[in-house]
Image 1: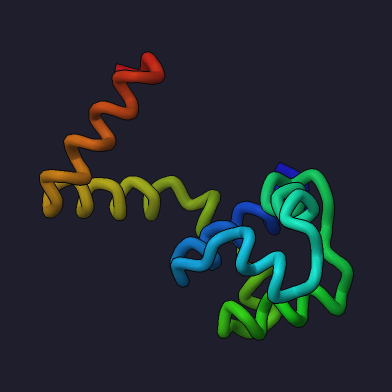
Image 2: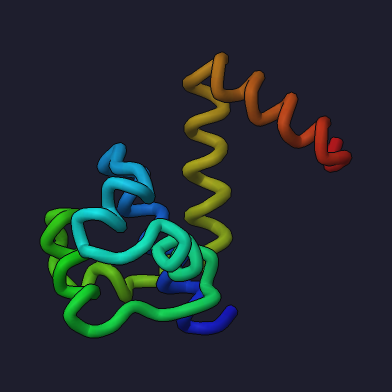
Length: 105
């Protein structure tokens, strides 16, 4: 996975965790929503000044936008999924339906 893809994935994770839409974030940093979408999809990279704005809007340190290690730790992923699946019946049903719909079950 390229750094642009990792950055985009991390950005999406932080943005959705704050319940901010792509449109609102793109407006706040002064770029077109299509360009912001390209960043989250790993197709482009923001200008340094926009990285600072993104961090400010999301309420994180700039360095936190570049913390990608948790994406590759399979044991951590498995642990979090197991915990969620065993403690939240609605989410478990939703994940089951999703996996079944894409042919993974």
